[in-house]
Image (cartoon, rainbow, N blue to C red; front, side):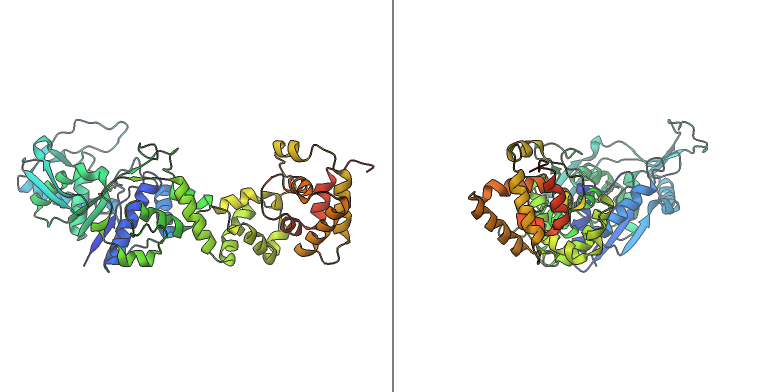
Amino acid sequence: MIRVRFAPSPTGNLHIGGARTALFNWLYARAKDGKFILRIEDTDQHRSRKEYLDEILQSLSWLGFNWDEIYFQIQRLDIYRAYAQRLLKDGRAYLAASQQTEEGSSQPLQEAIVFRVHPQRVRINDLIHGQIEFDTSVIKDQVLIKSDGTPTYNFACVVDDATMQITHVIRGDDHISNTPKQILLYKALGFRIPEFAHLPLILSKSGGRLSKRTGATAISQFRQMGFLPEALVNYLLLLGWSPGENREIIDIKEAARLFDITNANKTAATFDMDKINWINNQYIKGYSIEKLVDLLMPMLRQRFPRTQSYYSDRQKLQGLVKLYQGRINTLGDLLEWADFFFTDEINVDPAAAQRYLSQDLSSEFSLFLERIEKLEHFEVATIEKAFRELIVELNISSRQLIHPIRVALTGKTVGPGLFDVIFYLGKEVTRIRLSRWIKKGS
Ligand code: GLU
């Protein structure tokens, strides 16, 4: 049975890189009917935080990476110590007086347990990179248990991977240099060596490492921005694997059928915000309006707490969301682009006002208002009809009036169809906003 693990340290949020590692492990387990194990590497008590742990667990659940087993290293200290004792007894390790004194530490420091490295040839057949040979003569003796009694990463990792019967270690390329150190430990302990698969790095568009500015954004932040989990998972998948035939949109169930760790990409991936936006747009288009409204409702309430009319009238909100479904990349875009529906204080873009509202349109606006006030059935089609008739009477082109009305009502030059906008704003708001541009006495 295939057993893989994702082993985050709760010393920071779950970012794109970690999430991709989690995905590849989870997907491999799903593809091969194996088990996906979550191991929290929390032995660094100074840097580990409960809020990071919560954030990591929530993000993994949101992405749908459900785990079959979960372990916390901090609960396994006795196990690491027992294996270190065994190496001591076998003469493979020795005690070393601690050099470091931890400032402010009240714990009595014990002697560290150090592994004696015997240089030897270490070779692995990495499932992604193929044969890799390591020169272990440069590896110094390795601390196994630190003077504060906690294990080092490499030691805990090996003891855990072996005792948790991990068959495939799938992790980022940044851990490649740890692999030979770990293999020496596997050998000394007589453990079976698992398969290794190191995923190529994810670079920013400019070629450097991902930083906050270039997209190393926490998964929870993507969620807040209004990305859909399926879209994010689809994107993470493309950061290291391709379904072939230039396909970019792939359902996770289908991916699980086609995926194998041996056909993961060998070269570094590039994080591309435009691509992730495009993918999210595709998924938003595929979502039902019902589902989108469910997701948007709490976001809208939080951002525009006072707009009760939309929250109590679900049908109205559905219609409005439909106007934007095809054009938004994220749910956050809707909050921004459709803000004028939800707030009285609209921000009028000054350049747009200069361009479309600097001439006096008092009489045109008044005439238009009169017509729509009189409408018995206030609907998109009747609003449009009233507008078209007015244009003919005034003998002007529709563009001469459409843009100014749009800017006056929405503050923006682009958006959904004007008659839809007027319909969803309602007679009252339309009157208030157009009246602002009507000079008294006209
Ligand atoms: N805690 C390590 C990390 O977050 C795990 C590395 C591994 O998968 O072995 O990078």
